[in-house]
Length: 344
Image 1 (cartoon, rainbow, N blue to C red):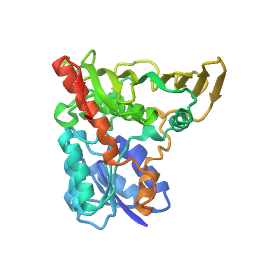
Image 2 (cartoon, one colour; image 1 turned 90 degrees about the vertical axis):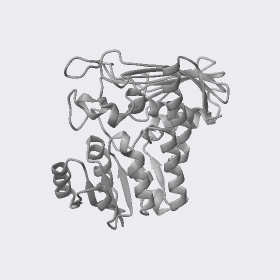
Image 3 (cartoon, rainbow, N blue to C red; image 1 turned 120 degrees about the horizontal axis):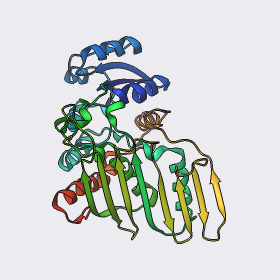
Image 4 (tube, rainbow, N blue to C red; image 1 turned 180 degrees about the vertical axis):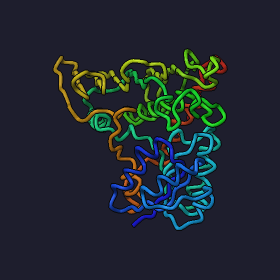
């Protein structure tokens, strides 16, 4: 039985990590920490765990593994401390707020001989898994272009402390806005689906609508528009937004030499394959998670499996580095107004 600790008891911890650990027969939730001590205490009672006064005290306990669900700016500090303390780590995305910190996390995991997994859960969504199988089997031939999007109305209704004061809008705690919250998901996903690595980024990150309570614009991006060139020759767009005030858009379309794959893009079918011949195949695999419809992600079960079985697959920190380089490349591209090479 693995003893599990949670560091950061916000919304993602409450709706995904804690209930999914509780449902896994190989886990026991024993330790919690949050900067809001009352919140941690309440959840400790609910899950039969102990609330600690600091994350350092939690790491000094006998937990085997921790989920790092704190605000973005503290991911690297806490994850590295946990690895050095001999704990396996599941870290929420974005991995870290600088490339140097991301690479330091990977180095710390190697030095400690412990698992470091990043919560890139879109790889595990049913239609994405099926799409990957179809692409690898040559169903659409060579991927030529793509577009992928993740757009919703913003984190102010999702955050555990809702409203315009959410930490997602605080540059000191979040570092990045929609690009970190949503863009890291779709950047990682397009590499996973195509089997290609992003090598060139042209991007624009902007604040188009979101404002603080006093009416001034927020200091992190609420929209990001990226053009990615892949090492296999494919090119496409990645768009993320916190200003989609209609239905959430979490779609991806890939155009290949032999057909088109439309993922979470059809009103009735989760995956549509349109072949060059005109033949159409429909796959009803699942429905993508939304902020309002959280379902089991598979992330926690994968993390537990990779600890118990060293041969089990998992989303390694090292595998997330290429996506993080592209994310930081997009920020640089936007700031400098030029195309940036990454993963060279």
